[in-house]
Length: 357
Length: 123
Image (tube, rainbow over all chains, first blue to last red; front, top):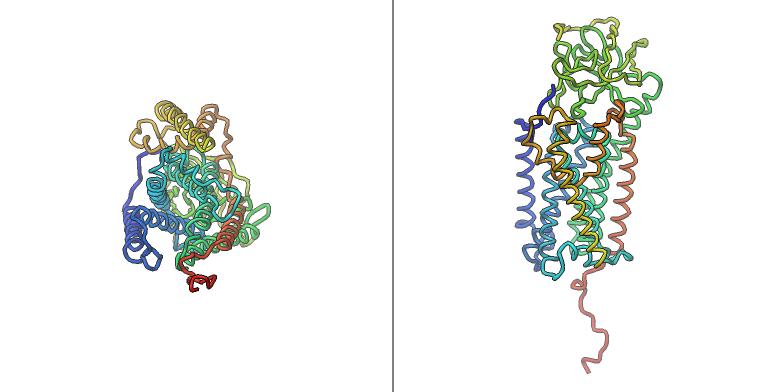
């Protein structure tokens, strides 16, 4: 299923997603700039540059908060999954909003000095030895660099080129960026608040991110602890549906999709070789499972894409122990054929056509 | 001022090296290491900002793929184990920095009603 890279992969769902996101950004900026100046104490005389800078800064914080809530929310409740699948457009948009915020700041506060404005930004406040009046700009600069790196490496190419582990580690910068944004706000605009609306909204947003992430992490830990052992339990024999998978999480954090096809069980990595899409959420048609993200296909017995395509994912050994289907946590090299294991009776209710690929 | 100037110069140098790496990688390297990129040119300008920002990683991966040094299993190694650590560090950091920020917040002088400190002016 090798496909040539294109600049942006669009589909109707992504159009709707992006339209809603852009409308949300426009609405936020409009409300911030024109509807709520008195709520946010902006009735005090500030010029349009500062007002715009604050609007875009607040918008970037809200967007980043939403982005960081989507991941754990989708882990805790699958109904949020549609929001997760196009999160990268959200991230790129956030980087642009944050960059606009930085542009307004640079071109107002530092534009009229005799020195270079970037030098001015770094030199204007160097009180690193105190908390009150700390140069909070450095946190903003760091967060902006992180957001730019994440946005700039969001194309499909980067995931394949860097490999998912490296790409994922790089994208863990989002947590450092969010902390940095919190520090930027806490030591910056939060020091200059007349009423507490902004403070409460800020703490509520950051609190939601913390609570959701810790809840998702603890939920994962519980699942992992329950499945620790040489063979990992997947599901009961009666839980399998013909043509669909049950997904198991191994103690090492990897996920395995175990499929029932023609009454037999096969297990492959749940992560698509293309972009780590969740293969286990795909349905088998003619021995092939289709990744719900980009349509890459694999034979569930061998983990190989049908010729002429060359993608491969690791396979796993499966066994049935009593009433429980189990998978061995050691992965076979990608593309290794594993003989499917018959599922004991009762037989599946509605066997699908078993035509070979 | 010197440190600030040096930082800006370092940033510019980083970007210039990145531009050279981007030119080489996007015209020669990418075709050698990724078959999906062969014949696909329109998407390449989108990669330029990424190469400018993380060119050392680009060079490292380019070298790894050219010399086939990466083990197949490395691609599938899960990184979720680090998720808990990242979440805990972020959460503790945010709580500490917000409390710190609130604790040093000063009251805006305009909110304070004027108080006459001495009676001298009336006399």
